[in-house]
Image (cartoon, rainbow, N blue to C red):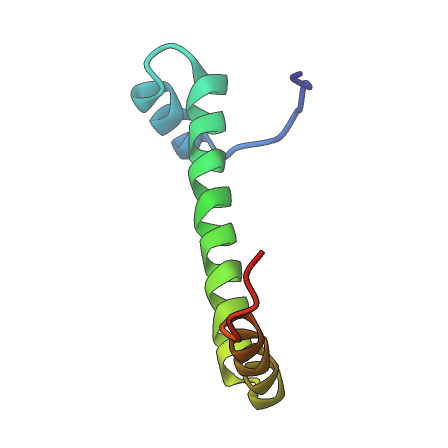
Length: 75
């Protein structure tokens, strides 16, 4: 699904967009925003992983679960 958006660009930016978009401004802008969104999500995941790694209580709980899973009670 796509939606239509209207926004204002500086003349120099519009000229650049016309130069690099290869005739399809929407596809170019979509590609740029997808790449930026991917980078944003990667940063958010990294931040969450670092916070998780620094959380001593959480790490202790994970260690308890690891011990539980390794207790030899297989199915």
